[in-house]
Length: 368
Image 1 (cartoon, helix red, strand yellow):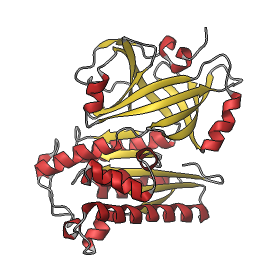
Image 2 (spheres, helix red, strand yellow):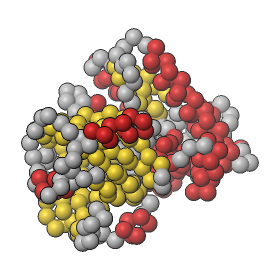
Image 3 (cartoon, one colour):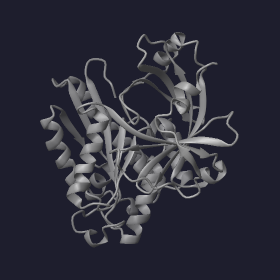
């Protein structure tokens, strides 16, 4: 997240057991140090506790164990952030080896709600405090021959258990504004290269370029979507601000669920049909409210429900508008323009509308 004096970015590397996280940390250190970042690592708190003798299976209360784990995890992350502000480098990258929502995969919904209450927080604030999340898929899904328990004494899962846990972790993070899943469709070395590319694109190295495909679809059954464990609904309120540049789009956004929100300011500049330069900044609620007075009167405030779906190694965003009774828009962000797309089961595509200005949020919000 953006600090007032320097850029401090906090990302999460998560994934199922035996996914390559330990190796990934080394690759990230080498790659981004060379790019001029000061890279700090927050180690995995669960492993720290287990190897120290404080294992969850020795506790009489899982919810209290997870509560204490999360308190320690959050304290460590805050300490690293505070120290990052004192360091000389102007570009700080904090890498969390697992983070808050990973704990959700080890709790029932009731236990998780209890922990949130104890921490006096909510799911949106806990999940979306991180700038980006990158999930490495366990070797138990697609690379079974490489699955092993030998390199982590805190790992106890069978292949079947590891695959199920991987699914729960993906479901826990689904709904985050920048969530990417790195699967086992390539060899391990290429998997690491794909991770570095995804992080680089997010950081804007060399430019913060977004490659996006957009499709007009039939309005899906919302109850069926909401029942999926890998789907999360997010409520979005989007306001366009006045800008002097014709090729530039400036907006502020309120994003969250169940009355809990985070706030962003986004500046976009179009390069081609599928490529745009995008810069995003996290706002406080007060900053967001102060910018509303700069709303462009030529555009209405846009309200929509976004259904974030993780499937087929892709992250789909389905936008449902209240005044569209029979259609919706689905967006998919890609790492290359020729990446193959597999559509989620049950989604009926009407046609591709990538590059069609009529289906941009900017045009949908325009007052005619």
